[in-house]
Length: 438
Ligand code: PMP
Figure 1 (spheres, helix red, strand yellow):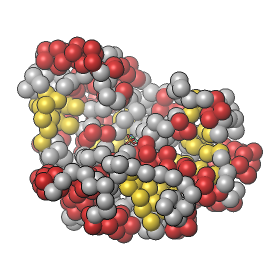
Figure 2 (figure 1 turned 90 degrees about the horizontal axis):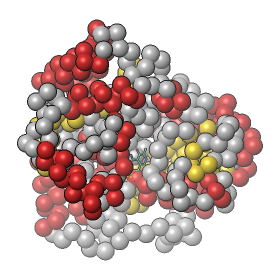
Figure 3 (figure 1 turned 135 degrees about the vertical axis):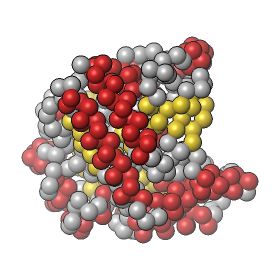
Figure 4 (figure 1 turned 90 degrees about the vertical axis):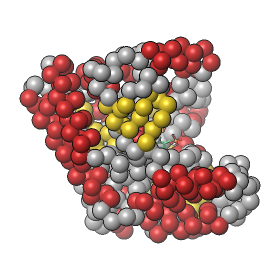
């Protein structure tokens, strides 16, 4: 337990609490869900590793909640950022770089005829909803419980008391009138979607989904779920929006829409796609795109307004291009898949040796590890897992130099920088942690 002493992190957390609300700039960074206390303050990151302000080294599986798929400070990406910055960080004019990244995204995600860059996944999702509403001239949105789509008003709405009831706000500050524009149904449940569409379909602008879920663990849709979702939605005259902020470029060079797990690509194609995270190579970015006639609703061509001072800035775009260039190298995804497989097997083995129930959902180079003895296919099942045990496990791993997301709902992300030795060290730490948990 070499990393237990973190006096400098403790001291910085005290200062941060005085100046920054909750001491963190995103609530998921706090340790509230894992028993509280000072989060580790990092001062440097390279490859698969972090170094904290007390000079402890950590193997990182957080990957900044997804974007850092090539490992930290990848030289090709760093070089692109430095080059961009030395040419000026923000122009407020178009650049050729934006065309390059737009082309790369369109090639990889063919459902997008036109693209627009924004600054975050939140903005991308928020705008797809506006565009869908402008195009369909309808207001309501159907979404799935436990899918996270950023922090804009409409998508911070939870399920009502039944599958076809109107939503209730998930956050203070969201008027009930807005929440009533949202219907939330369980993921992987086509019957619930059908019922919601029967009741609200003619008012529904779009059905929004993470086609492969990354926000209550990694969860694959059941066979036929996306096909059914697309068909039911289109039959109701509504648009299908895929939030691929996590899933695009995570499992292969492309999105869920061309992932080998779903052979009938045409049957699962969305009308609009929201992107973020990996496509910015670690700098702030978001993007959305879709069918030409829908995207042509957006200003300056159409009546749906969306703008951004920072949008398409040369540093983020250059980092995105460089990141995708790295990901195009042959074998990259197979390697992450193999490492994730080895790690998942090691965790399963360590847990079973001590009779600890652990359910792993692995999708290529990422997985979730839920402390439970049942499958996790929807949010309810993810909620019904042992959060307290996860909290202990998280701390036992952290104290041995393994950095995970401080929430039982978040995934483990492999990067191109992780090595076999990192995996061996992580499995060893997990054995110690599981023995202590027992
Ligand atoms: N959609 C999904 C699927 C996400 O996972 C996230 C962030 N975790 C967002 C949207 C919001 O992205 P951002 O934090 O960049 O606003």
